Length: 459
Image (tube, rainbow, N blue to C red):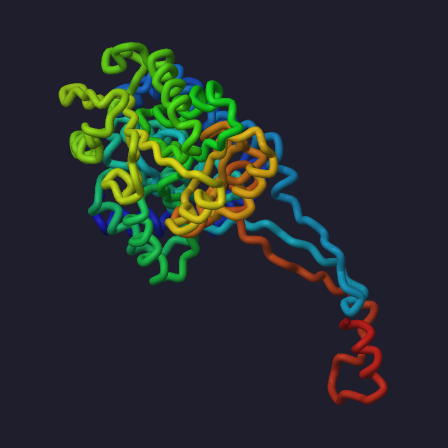
């Protein structure tokens, strides 16, 4: 799409938004139900697209992509009338007699830029929140997942007129053109490097943004942890989607005295979950492209590999890999891995682990495995991170009753459920002042006798 076509698209959507067509709650509900029906009708097409891009099995596609989007739609349909209402708040005595309330209003024309690792879920879930809040939306899926992006383009064209919801496909050139336009809100999911550019361009128009980024999410295993269960859940969270998950445990940080036992359990779980030959497992996905395949291989130190390490360039698959005796100075610890490579580092005391984690950039997620509530509370209180779990991994992002988002270098803002509705809404603060009473003391000329009354009202 050319720069002029993109400009026309934004103008067209702004004109449509200003007609007020997206404001009635019933119209928003119709849009969500239409999208819900379309997704259900095309489940097999979604499976095919994600298999082509990332090698995902049908089970994993529904669990991590389609099902999460459908759950978000169902949640919004259940709660949207409540979310869209005016909410009355107490009025201070100084404003007697008045009614004060907060009125949620859509932001307007929003841009949603999504990544390639969960290309369906991370495009459609924020779109659901944006539509529920009453916005129009331009969606820009990733060029790295072409089959899914093409499907999204076709599906949303089938569902909506472009003046309401539009899809812009393409790569860097289209991203650049979009970011030159004036949007009312930008929602971006992707890398920190691109996130910085999105924020820089948004600043030209003072456009607010949500940035869902990433980082090196630690997984602390404390000595009291149930190691068998910990290994099972860590292996699931780390190697899901071949490690290409923004909230995957990036590295294990375990207490030194339990390391050997934990390693044995992890090795056993890899064999149990992925088989003796993971590269031939039909339910194990693939790396998105050759560029990322080579990048991940470059992070593997063969001398430190204690499990996996094998790869197949033809299928773009890398075995679930574990590296031992890793330090924070190793190359694998200098960037977010975003692949099926799990370094293991050790600490002697929990305070040491907290200190080292806090010396790094704030991660998107943090996980701690422990049977000591005091240890869990200490880590959750003293470490800065987006969100996480105690005694599990990644499941916090699938809870509609909680917002999901980053903190510091891992992003800003959040979404899912009510938090997602709020993200795409502006809350107008309104005071409805009655006309039958008008207190004269606020007006000039000011009188000494009214000072005591002012102090009484405003204290």
